[in-house]
Length: 310
Image 1 (cartoon, rainbow, N blue to C red):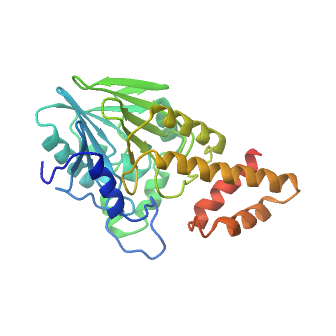
Image 2: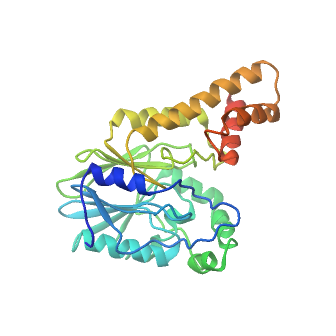
Image 3: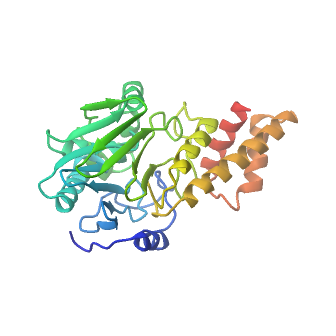
């Protein structure tokens, strides 16, 4: 594995080098949503990460390695990116069986799965399976319209059928290393999952906790449930948190999301009790928080969810 380094210090260094993360690109931005080969770093004894370099529509991809098998977390946008993830996994875990899981079913996380060989076992939560049935390739089609490269990457893309489906959690033995995959949605999406490596205290948190602002990306997104999911993550006591996008960090991502969502919830309740409309509430809270949380679109989504639940 080229340029492999180890330790929590590395994870924090990645965080310092990376800028703000976003699953969606800013208007007019020019970028190539390509997973970079030969950039994989080792963040703990059993965990490698292909960093997203804070590139929109590129996820942080995880590779968790046991003595007999490895688990890949997320795939990149389309099979071209999935092939890079597969090649890096084979470097980190030569000769081992492969499993694959996705943090959620958005295209840059899931639609590279077709690049993995048929013997790779794909694990999905039942909520992810249901979300695929409900929404299909709607978001992939939208991503394809963003640029010719996106269209090329997603041409012929389809969701791969799961080999293993679980309800609440699934424990996977990789050989001397047990990994727990947990369904925690609906938050960012209806089918959010996280992956926990107890031996290394590493958590793959998806979009449920990261540096960038939370995105309420599904009609089923629920602020109260999101706070409950953060309690679930916090109870694990992770030392390293690898989010879907942006810098690798630690439990401050969890506490930061809790503070953000709690502040919005409490303020929305107050304004609604005073008779303010949802639009008035969005305007008021956005004005109060925009300096700290500049992504006004994501801020408005959270406020609307809080108002509806109040």
